[in-house]
Amino acid sequence: MARAVDAPPDGSDVGDVIRWYRKHHNLTQQDAADLLNTTQSRLSKIEKGSLTLGLDELRLVASRFGIPPERLGVLPDRSADAVPNPRTVSDSPGAPLESQERWRAVRAALNSNRAALGDLAAELYPQAHCIPNTTVLTKPAWLPDAPVELADVQLHWRTDEVPKPSITGQIPESESARPLAADGERYRRYSSALRDLARPRLLDNRISYRLLDVDWADGRGRLDFNYTSYFEVLDIGEAVGHEFAEAWVNAGRKRPSMAGLRLRRHIADPFDLLARPMLPSINTLTIRRDPIDGHRMYLHQRDSKAVAAAGGMFHVIPAGVFQPAALAPQHQANDFSIWRNIQREFSEEFLGNPEHDGNSVEPIDYDEDEPFRSFTEARKSGDFRVYATATVLEPLTLWVELLTVAVIEAPAFDRLFAGMVEVNDEGSAVSTESGQPAVGIPFTSDARERLKAEPLSPISRACIELAWQHRHTLLAG
Image (cartoon, rainbow, N blue to C red; front, side):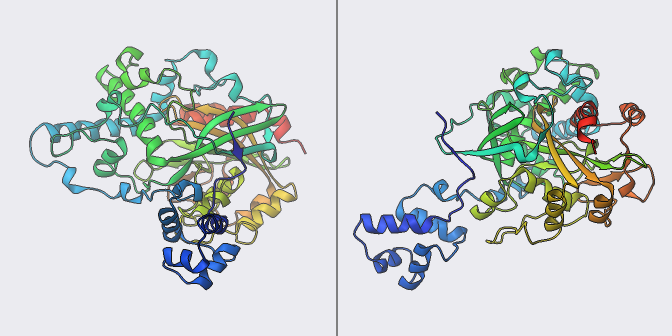
């Protein structure tokens, strides 16, 4: 049976670990301090838990005492994965240059047609798996009967040994989506090709939370997690989308069959959370509740030159993958919260604040730091309500997504987002009044119909359709 705790390890019990090791091996504090190249006085503070250690020190403790680094929440720093390698880019005639130019052309076609390609990709799966009026994929166990208050969604961290995924970005089935590098060898990962050949502004291989299990029952939810990284998931998701786009181009812009999609076909059960690394994006449809002048909702157009996924489409705002703000284990535990993830995205996408991805040891203080303090106060007062509506798969990339709705009372919205920006790092706001992003668009049946003519992402359509289906519950006074 899976064993779970409430959060990933944060290194806070390193003092207990050292004390156990020291006593087990009959070492004095000075002996243990010598092993760690520190003083007896400082080690005493560490053992008492009154001193927080940084990443380098936690790595040293793990190394000197033979502790698995993951036990202390210490994971590899993969930031170098996003640094371009100019030696792999070809500029000489030959097979590598042709392969890279073809890859760039397909990538451009993918980014220009994601909404249409997503709708076509959904046709490869049984219609019964689609959210009504959308092409987004789900299954009964992933779809709660009604919106679930975020407070009733419990997150658990798996502490047992989680099986390694059998489907990764390096498998032979993904080769068609990986071009040749300058030396004639095929890129080992899609993310490496993206980094070198068509790098978006925002591309960082961050530690992330891997979804392992979903359970919606009795008006509550439970989600189980462990570690993954952003690129591990991107390597499969974007490769699946790239493969489909290339087959679509080759078929004269008609839907290809599953028989010609080797990687997609290899993902026999797209809902199998253990077969491949699955990192949920949290997509929040924000509704400004105003029973007098009319409810409004918010979208933005994602810039394909800025983002690695869903570029060029209208998308709900805020949205972002589920990951800690920084690498240090204190962040990993502190940020293991859907609400805190959503808050950071509101801060970045509505207010234009820089991404909260610093390398500080100290985690974000969500109770005191702004704008998080104000968000939380509004939520406590009932003016800022958040619900989960479904777990789904985006049909083009088969990326797993958590759909949520934030209902914010008009006075609270106007106070919290008085400084809402028209353009953020990921795209630009969609509004019925130019230059006034806080106006948004009406949350009405007519607006839903008009959006059918826009490049609305399948995920956003599902967010809107589910919110519309449950609008009387969500917008009740």
